[in-house]
Length: 463
Image (cartoon, rainbow, N blue to C red; front, side, top):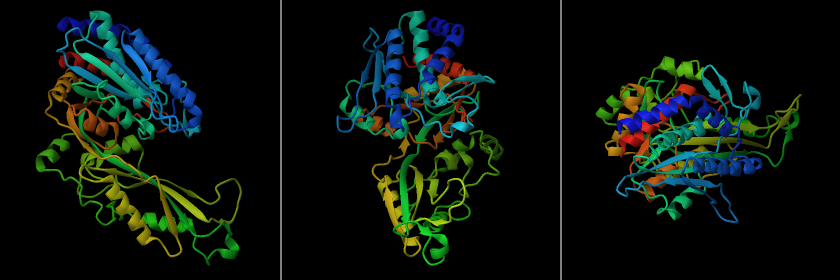
């Protein structure tokens, strides 16, 4: 096994530039799932990926999802089977769809014209998630091309709806449980804490997301004639949103925290080992200061406490020149990150009922997008596969991984737990400052290289 590992690592090092070039080609595909005009790009990304996996010696297929009435984005499935049926099977998950690139004008280079600057590759999807699952693909290649075999069976499930909530993926997993059968699931869709400090995520927050419409009149009005005599929906909505939190950031919705999981002393001590600081948060974000719920550390607020945030607000006239209109309607989009034991439907109901209670007179609220939502997830830290990941991470980065609760949401984890019921490993290869979902998304080339190494070591550790 030592020679297999060493040969694969040498192969990956020798092909460093080629692996970057192949990632760059993948990143040129504008596979934006949120925009219908990119439908052909979505399909092309799936076909490109399947072809690439076949070239490496895997059996790969592209599966359609959804139905004729409600079509979904394709799923890429690939596998390599060992001649020894007793070898364990790892299912490696990723997503080829990406966020919209807006605002385009803030990109220093084209979002789908990958550029390398200061040791990083800049493009939409570089870190989230093409670069991270490509690292696993290159790890498999490095072993197959040097040893002609893998130490374990490997399956890939790479899909195109993660950035729009995985609308059809749950049904695909439920309908293909035999195809996806495995001993453990590996997901790299999170971050290291620094280039030399790996993290193993054992919990993910859940999510609800909805839009609120505040209406105060049948149509837009002249602000000189009607201003001061009828309610302004922009002002009304601002007043409602302002009452969702107090000045310290604590959420004021009655019952919001009732079911939230609390941390015991040992878990709080473990999270305190994460090398997170106020100065680090300020440097990463450009914020003037750290702000959040009092009584909790940065690591706890990042993954162990629920949130309520306003993601957008609009209404009235915002074009060039002046238009003194009193708008009839205003809008906002709101998300809540949830922790274990919180029920998405219950939280959504509490938030919307409270917003109606505090709405100014003559303000009608309409809510959209309340269906579904995802629950938070806890993952077993002591599984043999999580321990194998810890060994692989330490050997790759030179430090013991830190256990972390992740603030983001990966809804597919719940589907995997419900249908496959197998251990999950969450080992990220990106960095906190990769500007996910923002202009100038990037992935450090050193992180790509180390991700490939970690992927090779993980496959060897899991045999």
